[in-house]
Length: 378
Image (cartoon, one colour):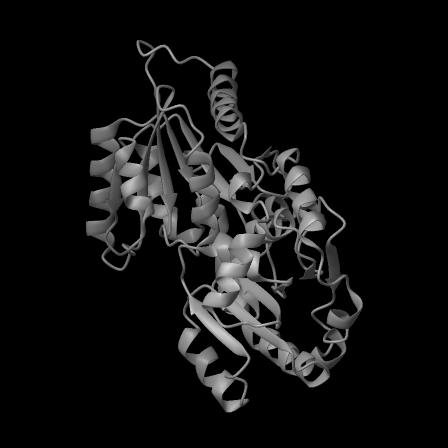
């Protein structure tokens, strides 16, 4: 990689919904951001929501700018802001990680002559509800017309957004060193939350329809009927937080189901867990599934999740069409309570996998330059 300060750095604008710590797409972007050579890339961010996050300081420390866009409900104000940013900053690349929300920004990028306009697909469906999926399917051609490059984290995610268009595979990398099992951290966290010898089942993700939280709770209630020595932790916040909290109370499950909300210590919480559970209705390639395997956690994942997430022998899939009572029996059958030494070996596997962030910065820079080269020869 060229680190000569006299060479002009690529200017990239990354478009995201927000930089919330529990936002999987935000985590993906930050894992690459931390590994880029800032002599070669200058990376700024355009966000649709201003949500408090430690990522702001991290980005600004490296010279990155953060723009909060006006709501798309005020279309003129929104478009004016998009044009102003693009005309002042003169980006080489715009890297869009949202869906239809970003249409006006991408339209402005095309109108202002931004050379490379990337759409990045992170999910295998176009919306969390049937209505949103139908709406987005009708509007998708407009968005696709604004782009000239396509990135995706998996084949399923690419097919959902781009159809048969050629795309660039960009894996969801993790900061592997953060996910090495540590017995002392596990003991500290379990003492902090008074776990005793409880078997801890955990989910990390937004409390949103996509993640299927009510099904998850129903399943855990059935698991509890088989084994009362469990706790269930959900780490992450989202639009269903209040409804899920109420549902847990109505089911009389507050003694063993805990909502942690958005946290900055997710890696430590993984240490305390014994099993990872992700019953999503759809995913592109969940970063959390990659992280859980690195931490040596047996994983029970819905079969709607792409098999590309698997890089260890820790993963068991189940059908989300199966009643919660039957799925609960899987918890009794899959591998449980690995020793500390057994869990540590999975860190070494993750270090050598495609999901390691070790060379992520070089990989992303290479893909950006390939897009620019392809544009020139065409």
